[in-house]
Image (cartoon, rainbow, N blue to C red; front, side):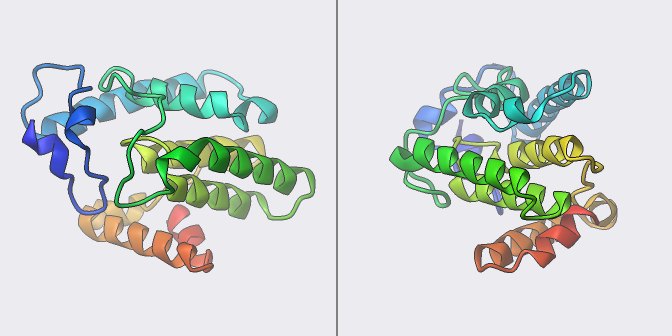
Amino acid sequence: MHFLVGGGAGQTPLDPDEAEGLIPSWLSTRGDLDRAEQENILRAESWTRGRRVRLPELIAESFIRHLHRRMFGEVWRWAGSYRTSNKNIGVDYWRIAEEIGQLLGNTLYWVENEVYEPDELAVRFHHRLVAIHPFPNGNGRLARTGADLLVEVLGGERFTWGVSLAAKDATAARRMYIEALQAADGGEIASLLAFARS
């Protein structure tokens, strides 16, 4: 299935072993895959809205894996399992568990010590999770959903993640998102914060 291996702009390419993990046999185009993933994600988001996730549960490695499985488990056999190869983004695969543990510890510290306002705390969590890139695919979508849950638990509103921009031009909105992530890589979080609320 060649369409799965290449990936588009800003998407992580899948290696052939990961592409073999596809569950639906009827998919033949990138558009088919996008629709199948989106339907799975919508069911997962419905699940998240139907329950009250508490902070200790949310900031746990098991919850991150479970949320990824909820979001992609009807499409990919490896959903919820960390990647086993290096990608064009992210930490070396053998460091994923350690980096996730550090992120969760930092996040708990930020919350307990009120280091950041809720929006900035959730966006920093999102940025670091994307930078770690723990799964073969779906990391940005997982990180956005995780940040939404986190900001809600902290008393804020879910983010819009460029919806107003995407309504005008989805390609430009995606480019702005990637540029904001790259700025955050360099320590400038303001652009990502602004994008999250746009």
